[in-house]
Image (cartoon, rainbow, N blue to C red; front, side):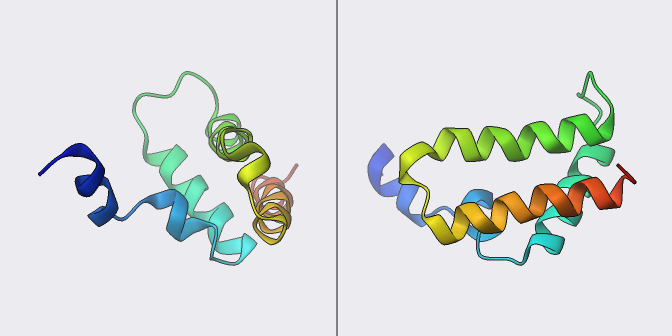
Length: 83
C-alpha cells in the first residue's frame, strides 16, 4: 500500500476534533496535555499550544465555521484552567 492510499484510511484527530463542540475540544486537549510525559511547559500552555498549532497549520484552508469552533475552544480551555 503506498503512502497516499494509506493516509486516506487513517482517522485523524484533527479531522474528528474540529467537528466537536468547543467544550469537548478543550477537555480533550486538557486530558492530552495532563497525561503527557513529554511536555516542557505547564499543561495549560501545552494544551493551548496544540490548539494554536492546529489553527496555524490549517491556515487559509481552515473553514470559517471550524475556525470559530476552535477559537471558542481557546476560551473554554482558559475556563478549565481558571484563566
